[in-house]
Image 1 (cartoon, helix red, strand yellow):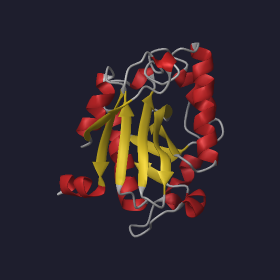
Image 2 (cartoon, rainbow, N blue to C red):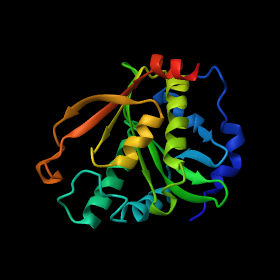
Image 3 (cartoon, rainbow, N blue to C red):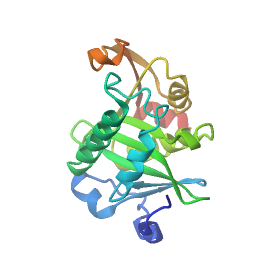
Image 4 (tube, one colour):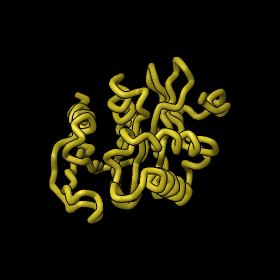
Length: 209
């Protein structure tokens, strides 16, 4: 699974420093985010098949909601939700591509993006072959920088299963702090409350100093 030909045109999509993106402009701009090891691009086309293959691994989807349903159903519903939210611009989903191999490594997202309030939730899923390389931490760092500096976000939240220690470390490394506990998504999810972490733009700016 190698990256699509759109990567060849990524230079024209480099963001101008002063540009603040809106839902009406982001489709045209198609931002591409860069890290020394990774490239982040908005999902499109065959990316959703790559994503379905990735989340069909039981370890990858373990902490995703709907735990009471069979894995194939959970995986398909998850990908459909991601695709639908991308089409309506409710969420921005970036595919994570490994530069060294050109392979699809995962997903990092702004979910429930609200332009009026400057709020969004962050989420990420990494393919099993790419665990332990720091890719989730690096991708989230890049996404937060994009959100606070290019989308005008003021408040970001993340929701995490309390047993998902690897994901919790990613959040803490990126400066998010524990905020509150909310009820499980559904009865079939094991009845475990969800931990909410948060980060404000002011906090993010202080961390950069």
